[in-house]
Length: 364
Image (cartoon, rainbow, N blue to C red):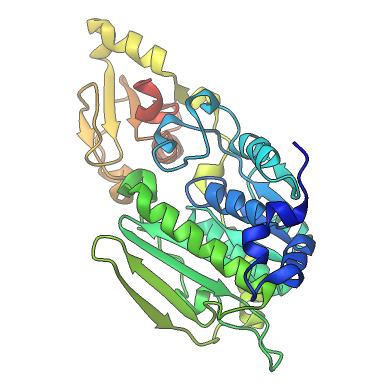
């Protein structure tokens, strides 16, 4: 079907605050969307549908069944396919006036500058704290605005960081709200999340991007919006630019921004669902296993010998039997692999394995 821009964006152009001039600004703009999950996928689709000229998607992950309740632009047929590639194809069919490309690997300290330098605005759609701080620090150093979003259970957080002000300075950044990276905050696979709050925060982020580009309204700069979906309450936390570029440059030199979720895992330290099921079916072999869950409240189809949350995983406190095979279990195989590495470091000869893909994969 042949369609013109005026036809496609008619309802948006009709807004006097947008008009053809504003629509033209959107068409000339470019946006980098990092993360194609619960936040990133609707962000990318809505931005493309509103007329952003160029969008680049970054995500290393594949679609999992557990994603589908909140990542509504993926289908059952997309399970195990790369998120960035699937989302790119969806957008191409949906938004004829947007050029969409993708990178199917993690954003890291080594490639972050090359990626963000090509785009006007960076949008954080990740659920990784190290990646959030990496994006923030890189955007401060390269003077790029960053539209931030994050989730915790029923709460959502939105802000627009590092915006150029009229006096030539830049607005507050993530470190002005949270100077240090927390180490004990679980991601959504551990804490859980409801799909409604995910969609709300994603469209709030879209709203921030559109305001930045068109110049209308008031962006959430120098403030952090905190919204609770259960009580329908919100508050705005005022921020002041205090952690400036020079300090962030020093931090960038020494921090790795490493996230175990993005790590390539050693296949020799893994056990597949099929292998574990076979072990458990044989009584003699099953007695030689020591199963440890590293997340509490996991719904397991088998009994474990111990539950030690990854935040409390102390290798020195675990009584080890070198004649046994230890199998670490979590929801998706990331924290179990982290625990496996910790045990292997302390006991190099110990046979310890991480359940590949976690319980999400085991139950398929």
